[in-house]
Amino acid sequence: MFVRLRSAGPQGEPCQAATDVADRAPEPLVAFVLRPVDSPAELLRAARARAHLSASALAARSGVSPSAVLRIEAGEMDPTVGMLARLLEAAGERLRISSDTTETPVELARLVDAWKEGGGRIEPDWTRLRATLDALQGRPQAVATAIARPPARSGSPVVDVLLAGIADKLADDHQLPRPAWTSRRTLKIPWAPAATPRQHAYQQKHTPRQLAQRNIVVDAGTLWRDGPARV
Image (cartoon, rainbow, N blue to C red; front, side, top):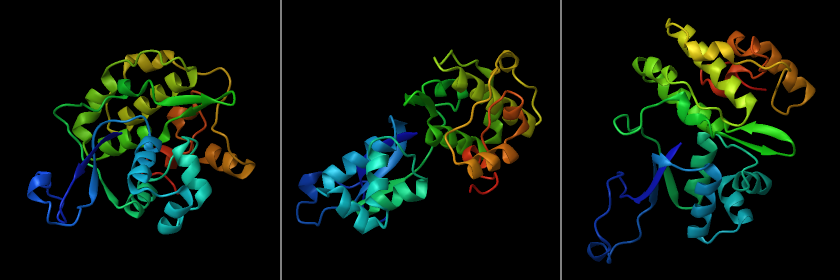
């Protein structure tokens, strides 16, 4: 994900210098997706601090539970774009997402750090993964470049294999040759994100074959916008 906070007027135009707008009410802040941030947690914590709101107050304004606010800020929960936008709006800010294709090419190789480990489990950064795939969905001409460069080893075999499966699915979906680097990556033991038995059964049923054949169990809706709805 790429984010920059800027002041913006009602129509989204940048505000003038503070000396030129001293006689006007403060304008809302806009989050532009332009430069890397670690996670939505960083963005939400900063927005809540600027608004001088407690987690409970932000939850009441946004309609999101206080526990969800705290989990997002702790990096334990990845919010949807809609939820993040609602939380920022409750803090007096707006989320605006855009892509800069000239400065930052979309590449799977840039996602080797899109994970964390906690409680003995690997947790991919689903928000960053989805953001990359969303960007490619709108730019099919960029897929060949996105999958061409082999990602460096991430330190997590799960993430290494997950990126290989994603690359192969992108290649198959766009009728491109599969990259050579993906053929050497697979898991000996199946891996799936933490889930209830019902959710796990759903994940198994809807896992794309490019992931399933590498022993990764993740339903398509977790990563692709046009995948089946998640349970």
